[in-house]
Amino acid sequence: MDDTSETVSPRSRTVTLILAGLFFFSCCGGLHRIYTGKIFTGILQILTGGGLFVWQIIDIIRILLGTYDDAQGRDIVEW
Image 1 (cartoon, helix red, strand yellow):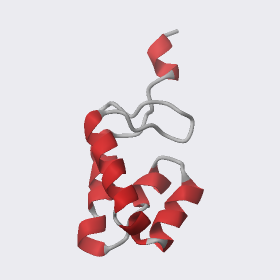
Image 2 (tube, rainbow, N blue to C red):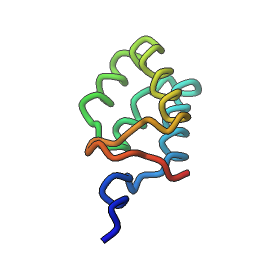
Image 3 (cartoon, rainbow, N blue to C red):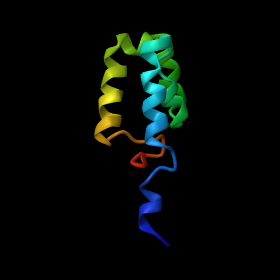
Image 4 (cartoon, rainbow, N blue to C red):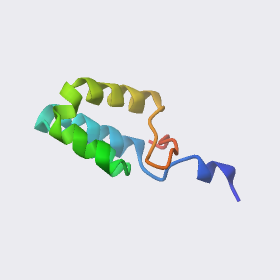
C-alpha cells in the first residue's frame, strides 16, 4: 500500500483555488472550505464575508503555497 495515499487528499488544488477565488466575484467566501470537508468553518466564512477578507486571503495564500489541507488533515497537493 502506498503511504502517500494516507497523507494526500483526493481533492483538487485547482478546484479549491477556484472556489476560494470566487469570493472576489460573488462575495461568497467559504465554498472552498465546504468542498474540502470543513463544513462548519465554511459556513462561518460565508456568514462573515470570508472573515472580513482576511481569513479568505490567508486561505488563498495557503492553497497557492500547498500548505492547505482537508478536514482529515491530508495535504491538497494535486493540481
